[in-house]
Image 1 (cartoon, rainbow, N blue to C red):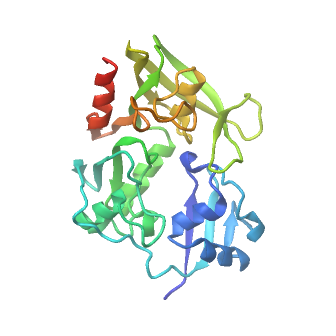
Image 2: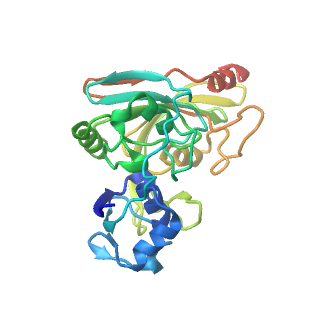
Image 3: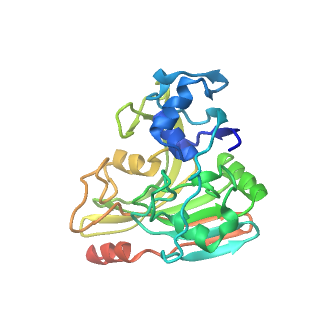
Length: 305
């Protein structure tokens, strides 16, 4: 099999992941394969070759990771699952918007993994294979946390993938989320916070002083839609993108997202999972909305919202 070189730009939502885990997911390779790759000097971070001692270091947003002379595993691509449920919200020239259910990963991290959105999508649209970062991330334009539901965009052509990824990096994509939070919150605000990823595993994000090393300025707008029964429905429009940004911001306000086991009180009978839903995505001719999923609607009903 022919060796190849690959280059990846770390997104803000991926910042803080261990280097070996990031490469494992990006390449569709096992952790052992990544360690061998590091041992032979096949990985450069921001043009500096790193050795195996760097495997546990967190990757930084905006870093360019180059993989040299990598021999992709034969199982580089996801296994199509034609029987898996899949809801197409909209599609156009070189793109598809799909409904991501809560609890469903966006793409597999290993060849044998099934049950992801990409496994279902390539069975329906095989032209996605090889687009963008290719392999186990074929066509993936952006991501949502596993427990977050809502709109997700994929590209079906390379040129479209590049334009959409650049639009996300340039903050030209509008995003709207709906969250059910603990407590009764009123008003609206443009909230500016400096966030940083801690070194704990799995990654955690904390609010930091403006001048703290490694902190990044984040911006979002939140608006309380209505409160009842000790909970509030909040609409959030992030301007920047950062790992767990919405969850950390709402917890910072003293109103964590219901069901958030990391930044809030965790699961409860009233919130069986993280009550965060990506309701809309917009960019030029792309305007896609996702209705509240059943468990979100049931939670709203339970609180009288």
